[in-house]
Length: 207
Image (tube, rainbow, N blue to C red):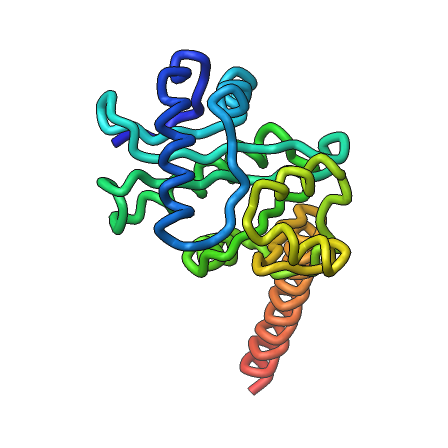
């Protein structure tokens, strides 16, 4: 099994990707924004997608959407073919597309909306936090993509404030602030430890 950044050589998989996404939504009975083969091919052409292949057989996929002049990116369309489920592949694909997003758009906030508990768990492990829809992109093109979801009426009735999906966000600036605080706390602890050790040695010498 290989999980790689997709390109134009993977155009032949566009239709099966769309079919797998659609069939998965029917089985789960949840809403999902439909995508056309042409839309998927554009992601492949831009290098904004990750594909999992077992030899030449399609196994899984996820792509990146860019919003708000690269201030936000979304990892969308995560799918694993039925023949390859329950093997931990979704998590590996999500990790790969997350790394690709951080590499291509290092300052962007990475977000997603999902009804799937498994995806929420994966997102949480990657550093995402649950947020209100108001903290996500306000780019109308993103929300327009929800029009093909069967739950779109809920989104419109609540004036785009909530739906059956949960919004999750990874903010690199917030992570850096946490890392900075932890680093400072770590340095302070080491300095305090050094002072205490020094005082302990002095005390022993005096005795």
